[in-house]
Image (cartoon, rainbow, N blue to C red; front, top):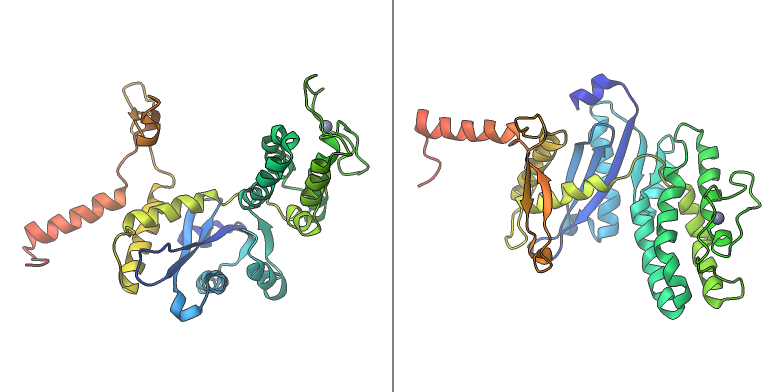
Length: 326
Ligand SMILES: [Zn+2]
């Protein structure tokens, strides 16, 4: 918070909720704000379903509480990036309309993939295109300059996305001033172009040019994405294992500890070897082990906060002779 108040740069916030899966006794939800320029959790709220209701209502309430939390430090987001949660979109549009609202491309791509997979099972000619279509959804905003004004950005992203239905039938000029023609080089000769009369192609058009979907595409974020919040959410699980049940306070403490851990690690330094290169080690994940594969990871320093916590605990026990429990 201190960094944010002294930085005086527009706050770019990623917001998302993690709903607890069964295993925890009470149904909790965690809504968090991640400042995407500095990659720090700046607000995290714990919500209970019996206090608020279904997970849809919890998500909106979580968003409002994070916003109120920032307000007490006179901080206000310039841009917020979320998934396509309807209630939050409506709330920002109607009650916080000075905040720019964008959608995270990963969430939109996941939803699109869920629709295209069954379609490609029915119409196998679409299969070779699936990966490229999803890739195109990522490319449209990522290749658009983020310093343009909001309207131009939206028009260019939309035009790029809509060019897809021309491209797959081997048409590369588009009746659109914002993206008049494809910018790729010539396609390989063996490209399996679709045909305009194919039923699969017509269905593909229905999905990719659906009015609501196009509205969402326009709102895609061109530079920041919220995938780091997923890392924070999995970190909370490490502090509050699903097998155990926790009280509200117990859960809240674990969530805050996870936030401290995340912030401490988000710009964490690597342990260097003699040549000043990051030290590497191999891991053998069980799932991949059968195939004899392994992953290479970099060795990181233990976060300072945990060294300080451990020192405090040891000092309390051995110097102050404090007995924590019997
Ligand atoms: Zn093309």
